[in-house]
Image (cartoon, rainbow, N blue to C red):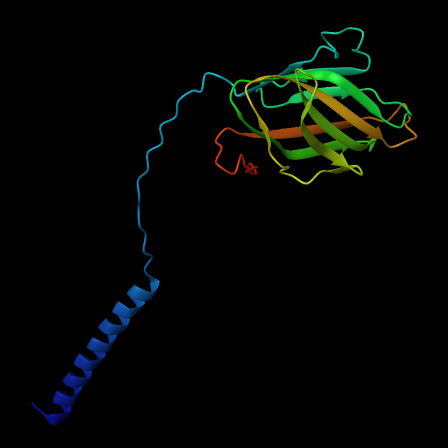
Length: 204
């Protein structure tokens, strides 16, 4: 075998080894490393709704005298309520015992989000949750200067029992007959407390 052939064979071997090394490095560089874990979640129904919103003693549709001024109904999901209110060119409107709140499980209630649509009729809106004896348990801001209050709001602790919901509204005057505004309030309710109380957790 000639010297030239021997050198050529050595070059081929070297090139082959280099190619194999480059292929190995490329495979390592381009490879994805995936770890797979398995988790188990068991879902079961919670037969008792923690909160139940319903019409209060001073609101429609149950009180026909109050119906032209306020209608208050709980949502089908039981997580909130819908209130239709009539406003005039007054400095404020206070709807006393418009709603009833039945608490079946102790926890912390808070406003998770506020959505408004329509004419900007309302400057300030505040919800008061009152005990059956008439004392204020929770003061929850909803609107301030026409804008949704910071959410989630501070959590307010509720024990089991029956409460009433009062609504305080300061309108933007003057109000015209063509105006209307819808305010949707989404509540959160934390049923798991700690030594520091109930925390407000934003819902995704």
